[in-house]
Image (cartoon, rainbow, N blue to C red; front, side, top):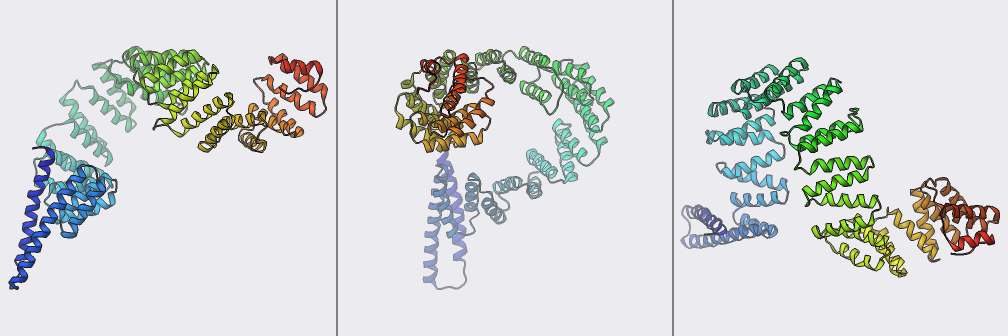
Length: 586
């Protein structure tokens, strides 16, 4: 018999009992007309059968994931029998699955009130109460379950925890003491009692609980650590240090105690000793890698201002890597740190070590390709993106990366199918889609498919109205084609408004104004571009010379054209402009 049949047959048997009790209630009426009784009995049997059919169908639909259909069926069951606790329970489980806790709570409360002895109703209602942070009500239910099943350890634990959550500390302690009688001295119970004693301001009692654990197992280092932590909370640093040192006596390589001692000395402003224990923790082979990473992030965060030099930070990371040779995470962490230091080649090496250990980690591949982009290493970027696409064919950003390598090689036709593939992947994000259309527009423009390029640029702006790079290029290309100049001016103006110090954007806007023959305003913005031209882009001087020429300042125009030539602009038209002292269109 399969699982579905078992559930259905079980429900049928249960419903048979329900239908029998319903019939009994109807046929037990005193002195009624025989014909009328026969009609009522017949109707009741029909309703019972209908109820049973609807309920079983509801179970089937719920198991198939058709929650709407199941809800309608169980609701019809309640129309037939408004006191059907089992229908209320099933409806409640559907509401919980749909995260409608309010509706579930109302139904469960009614079902539990109708059948307080049903353990399933009780436990689910307690869970909902707990989710609503009504720990007191959940504790009441588990208290009844404990009375019903006094030897059920799980119920006692749960009841004790709920008492603690609802701040009924004395009741919680009674429960934990009851558990201890059943189980004997137990770490979980003692730690729970310790936390309660701390909550009710009885630190001595809390220490006594931990001391009992120490006495029961004097070689267990974590108990001494717990005691040290207790003394630290009381600001008794001397006693805390005594217990931390006891841990070191038992196990000098205990990573957790070195973490604790690092924090101890850091709080005491003894950075030298703190650093010693940090490095010891990083060298530990027993301390888990995630704890080490969290510790590193804590001590290197700006907020903590621990004052460790870059050289020391790198040595800590190297210690972590040496102690965890089979872990990829330390290499990735080191790589991210190196990226912050703008040491991209060294970061690339670390990410490649990480990939050797965990080649299935997509983020590592993405970061490596981004480093290729940062280093302008297009050949390596093409190889890396090809390999990444083989491993992760459903990651749209990888196709965008590869298309960027084709853009550098002016392989515009080859870009289009890659970008269309990226666009077709269902998981593509809006930000990636914006990049897809940006590069698509660039490819189409260079393929002289101008109308398609304009549509692609429009799509970029529709998807991401803050993609200023695309808007800048769009404005510039429109000006070069002498098309839609009003639109080009509007786009260029918006970009400059949002990026007033960007020389490239200022240059584009000035050039659009130049094409529109608004030379004075073009000069104003080109002056701003040159003032912000920290990279000394020589093209700006070429454009500035063109503007000055049309304003009648021929001498300064030639001076700027010469600056452009000296800066590296290699153009026959520029040579001719300088020689003839006259503007020529490119």
